[in-house]
Length: 235
Length: 235
DNA sequence: AAAGCTATTCTTGTATACACAACACGGGTT
DNA sequence: AACCCGTGTTGTGTATACAAGAATAGCTTT
Image (cartoon, rainbow over the protein chains, first blue to last red):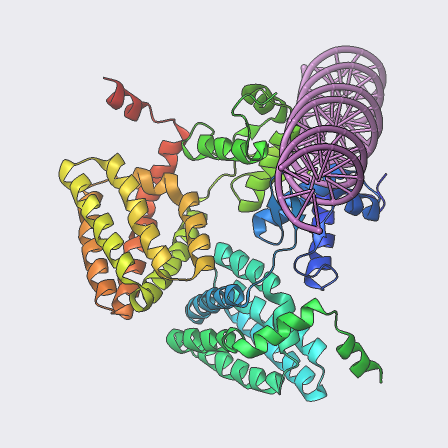
């Protein structure tokens, strides 16, 4: 049946990514019931690969499956989200600490490039572009830690927090402060100062999870699909 | 068909745990091909729940699924294992740091109880019992961090490293050194010294991942199912 | 005899069918 | 009128059937 692609890979894998996309973009806000039949029809496949995708997403924590009661998008309590940011901060700090000690010349170049790319986006005042390049920047640091498992864990959690980060980039002039923090982080890593790199990265991430009120506002915004944002951009 | 229980929970869930058990106990050593039909017959169920269990295990990293080529128990390269211990050490350190600041009176009691239970096992020279109580000890610290997400992550990784930890408890007098390290950790946490708690826990875990030769030996032992152990227990 | 190609077989991936539990709705009773 | 119980419907959980790709073995050819 294959409604999506000539399927060189597992269909359930692709479905998982599609469903994940629908969750993190807010198309399926927290609390949504994920009916297997509906999803199956929506994707033009049978229930089997849908189930497999849901199980996979459930084991990452992106959906919640209760026996005989189906799958739902879990409600992210604000404190839960803070916990996740707290862990993210520590993972990033660890990446920075290791990267400062282990980074290779080629990676140093990549780090500088990523940083300069962010600068361009900041100067242009483009939050969406900055958001995208910011991901690259952090990913370079993950890889420079030379701990593949750590990099995987960090990437996974980063992806899961993606929607929240993204919305927070629009508050105040977060983009500018974020960029100046990046500069200090680059200095510390390139200078081999692992302690500074570590603590700066921790602080860089934690600020996003610390502002409770911002966070709650962000969550509310996710529940009501971003009409305000669209209106803002459109008018 | 339900060969296992009157199934109050998902069958694939239980099958996943059973298969996980077979993997971590060495019944399915790294590199083993996990044939869906064989597993299905072995458990007296159809392929469907087996597939779901395998997918779930794959998303935790406990098995590896390559499209159209089936599931296998991944070969754990020693450096990969070191990476995992490095991350585990950092998670434990974070738990300790937070626990030292946030632990409640009731949890303080539980920590002391767990520690004293370990002491009993150490005095009795029972590595298996010590191993078990050691898990409880660490779990108390995870919970005392009052970061549920962190506790989940730490528990998951701990489980995944279980078989390696377990075998390493038998080398030298690891049990005794482990216990004295525990004592210092308890002091630091109860004394509210988060920095000490953090660095002691980091060191406590990292030693297990640092000794490359021990680790390689452990891996080899996993490939040749533990006949020595069985003979020891049987005779 | 060795190498390459083809056919067969075995296993995974997907679809469909069936069973059973949970929820909803309606009728009866207190 | 409100609450309880039974029945119907909906949707999950498991089994089975079918299709397609990958591995293998046998055959042909050089």
